[in-house]
Amino acid sequence: MLDKTNLKKGFPLSNNSQSKLDSGIRDNYTRGTTGDFLREKIQTGSKLSIVSAYFTIYAYEALKDKLDDIENLQFLFGEPRFVKSLDPNKTDKKAYNLEDNSMTLANRLSQRRAAKECMDWISSKVEIRSIKKSNLLHGKMYHIANGKVEDAIMGSSNFTVSGLGEAKNTSNIELNLIVNDNRDRRELKGWFESLWENDELVEDVKGEVLNYLAQLYQDHAPEFIYFKTLYHVFEDYLSEESKGGLAEIHNQVVDAEIWKMLFEFQKDGVKGAIKKLEAYNGCILADSVGLGKTFEALAVIKYFELKNARVLVLCPKKLRENWTIYQAQNNNQLNPFLRDKFSYAVLSHTDLSREGGYTGDIDLGNINWGNYDLVVIDESHNFRNNTPGRKDENGEVVHRSRYQRLMEDIIQQGIKTKVLLLSATPVNNSISLQAVKKKVWIARFWILLELKVFKRPCVVPRSHLIPGQRRAVTERPANYSIT
Image (cartoon, rainbow, N blue to C red):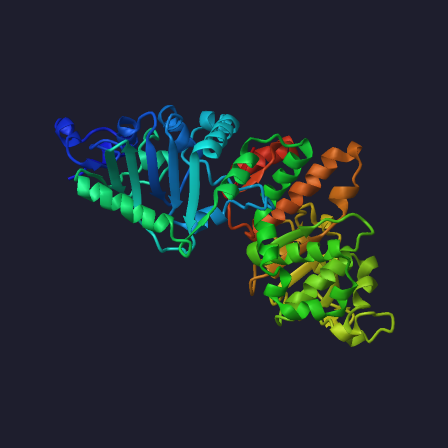
């Protein structure tokens, strides 16, 4: 029975390990490693034949002292997907398939040197071919010919640091068997040659491997490093876009009049907002003044209305007409989007603190506040303060604030509500108002926390918090942290 503690640490199981080394098994654990077998058998002038699904520069580096003195190596990739992932056209420049994931930082810092040495070695002494069809060849084999003396081992070990048993504490447990019979070794070599020479099954890929290796050691301009960093930051987003973007979410929205009116940068903003609303139930759209936040919000609204969602727009009283102009029921001749038939409701921020009366044709006394799927809040920084309502002499709330109505009746009650916040404040505040900016930023962040829109732990930059807010964070239940 295996000792799992020792298994993780790479320690031998028992005192009879030496006797186990005398067996023909090499498992990278208690019966020797594939790397040590190759080190023992490879000599100056050896001819090698290898079948493996993977090849890494650090596996070469681990056996460099032996491999540099061989006469030649014929390397056959048993899995074509590995070579295809190298991106020989260099359109990506992000894959590092020729390195080992298990390598330490010190090894990674030496990658440039290792890649250059490996490339020189391959150029002069190695032929590389690959099976054309995926999942056709699964075996791994190492054959060594020293004149008329042959050695071979076959099993599960790939030509990687972990596969050869050269990784400290992270090597795979493999199952390889040394081929001792001369007839079997000759037959194994014959089997390899029959595959190697079969043009229908294999193809030469040495050029692609060399081209890729050149990427690993070449110098890169600062501009390339900058764009590579941006690529990795937005890699998931770009991957989603390449699969269809918004069209995959809802095809009809791209046919809407509002969508046709948007510039490309606005369409990107709309796509991002929709995805965040779908994923986290909340989003802040913070483009600067004049960049079209209203039109972007209308496109988001149209997307949700096409899904039969009920939408409420909350705006300052002075901006109410800016939003009602697009409502279909008003049939306004100034509305360029009549064909989109927007059906959202519009209320003023101050309406939230009213208990009755009418706004337009909406009866505030009988409105079902908790029945909106999406709430769009224009000039959302007006909700930055959690102002309590008026209380009587007994401490009972007799008049709720707009913030309390938003949180208690619209967001917390009724159906699940998504919230889109619009504000140019994060962009337009001057540097001298940095403290105010931080207050506004964190106030809107509190709203999102109250909404429980984040499904993952969130990190709040400590520099964005004033001392009182830092104390408040420590008192709140933990689904976020401060850095």
